[in-house]
Image (tube, rainbow, N blue to C red):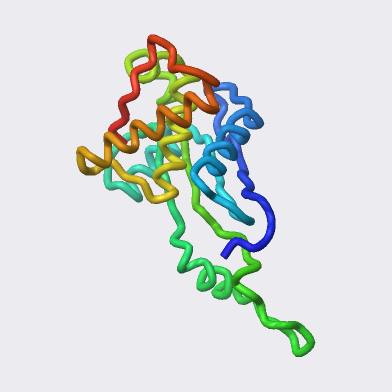
Length: 184
């Protein structure tokens, strides 16, 4: 699955509360995907949404009220062919059968609410910039199958987040004020 090519990240800013540099966050996401071993044609979407939209997503998918900071929606790679073929794609008599190996691997979506990030940043990661970076890395790790439900998983995920942030966000050690805690 994934075919020849490189991972792609599609970013969309669907909110107006916090100005964002989408190119910067796209680069960070691509760096994280590469470091996590994603190869070939794979697609990830990163959406930045307003608090009211995040509250709707949180209620619909998590059963919780109010907006949250980040939600991750992984797509199971085994279902990619079912999703693609279920759209009604057909082949004519002169077309070769579709090779699932040539299709892009659809990793999933990371949805971030910058206004929630701005509110929690001082008590969480320290700065809004660090908070947005942490939420993006955290969401990508969830899309790629990592979790933090158990204590050992949480410790492993936090260590991976810190390593990725040091490599691609700070390009060195974490700043003194960075607090790496995330419960979502």
